[in-house]
Length: 244
Length: 310
Image (cartoon, rainbow over all chains, first blue to last red; front, side, top):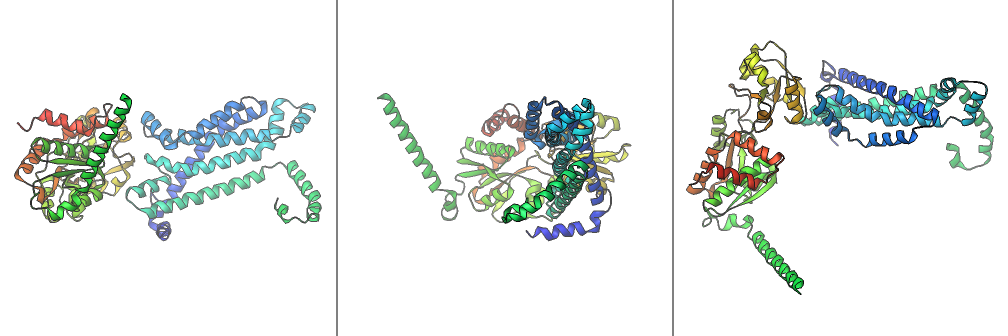
C-alpha cells in the first residue's frame, strides 16, 4: 500500500501537468473519446429502445442482442478489429460503442415500459397521434430512465477506454500502459485515481440531469404523495421504514 | 481373465516406473554437487531452459548433441524467467543453460556499457560468478531490431539506422511503450544517429499488430525480435545498427565449470558455430505455426539437417 503516497506525488508533480502528454491533455482526450462513444451509442440505441418500448415489438431480440454485446471480451474484440482494420481510432471506437449499447438500450425501453398505460390511453383518447403520444407523453415520462441508461453506460465507457491504450491512443489509459511497461506504479495508480474521479464527476453530472428532466407534473404528483404519506409514517413507529 | 492379468501387468509397470522415478529424484543434483564432485566432473549434465519455446528448443539441441556424443545429458525444460533458472544453475539443480549474451551480461553487471557482440562476450567472462563460464557464442541472435518495409527501404535507400537521417518524411516507430525510455529506443535514435522519431506505442511486443501497422504504413519503423518469422514473411528489411544502440543478444551456453570437459566443450562449440538466426526463425515458426511441433522433434530435425557429428 506504500504506492499510494507516490501516486499522489505523481499527481501533484507539475511536470506531469504540462505538454502534449500532460494530464490536462490526456483527460481532455479521455473525455472526448467518451463523448464521441456516447453520442454514437445514443444515436443507435435510444431510437431503437424507444421504438421497442412504443410498439412493444422486438423486445426479445433487443434483450438477446444486449446479452451478446455484454458477453464480448473487450480486449479480445479490440485486437481482432485492430488486426482487421488497422491500428486507427475506429477499432476501439467500435468496441466501446458495443460496450455502451446494452445499458443505453435497456434504459430506453425500460423507461418506455415504466410509462403508465392509462396515461397513454388517456393521451390517445384526447386525439393525439402516435408520434404525439411518443414525443409529448411517453418520451418526457421515460426520460429520467433513458438518462439513467446513459449514466450507467458513461461509467463503463470512461472506465474501459483505458484498455484501448494497448494501441497507440491517448486518454488516461496511456499512463497505465506506459507505466506498466517501465514498472512505474505511481503513474499507473495516479492515472487510475484520475479515471475514478472522472467517472464520479460524470456520474454526479448525470444524476443532476436525471433529476432536472423529471416532468413538472410527475414532480407535483410525487410531492402530493409525500404530503399524504408523512402523517401515516410518523404514526406507525417502525424506524426501519422511514428511510424509504 | 486375460483382462485381469493385463490389469496386474499394468499395475506392475506403473509400480516399477514409480520406483524408477523415485530413484531419479532421490539422487537429485542437490546432493551430488557437494559430495561427489571430483569423480563426476564430466559425468551427467542437466540442461535447463527458460519458459519460452526458443530456449527449450536450444536446450533440446544441446541435450541431444551431448547424448549423441556419449555424454550423459538430461533436460529440465521450462524452468521460468532468468532470475529463476540462473538461481537453479547456481544451486546446482541444472548445469548448463542456453542464454542470450546481452541480457546475461546485464543480469550480472547492470552498469556494463558493452553493446556489440564482441564487447558483450568479452565483458561476460569478468561479470559471471565464480565457477561458471560461457562457451563460444553463436552468431544466432534474438535481439530487438528496427525494421522497415522493402518499399520504404528502396524508395529512400535505407538499409541502416544511419541512413534514416536523410529520409524526408516524418518517422513513427511502432514498439512497446517502454521504447520511449530505453537507450535503444527513441532516445538512442536521437543521440546516436541524430534521427527524430515519434513512438506509436503498441503493447504486443513486436507481434501481429505491430507488423500490420508497419505493412499498412501507419508506422515507418517497427521494433521486432530478430527471430520472428514475421520479418521474412512480410519481406521486411532489418536495419543495421553500426553504432550499436541495441545490445547484442547472441545465443551462448553458460555452464558449471565442474562439468566442462574437452568433449563437452567441442560438442557445444560445434553446435554454436552451426546455429544461425535464420535457424532460430524457422525453429520458432515450426513451434508456433500450424505444425506445433515439439521442441524435442524440432531439435532432432535441426541436428539431422546440419549433420555436425560425423
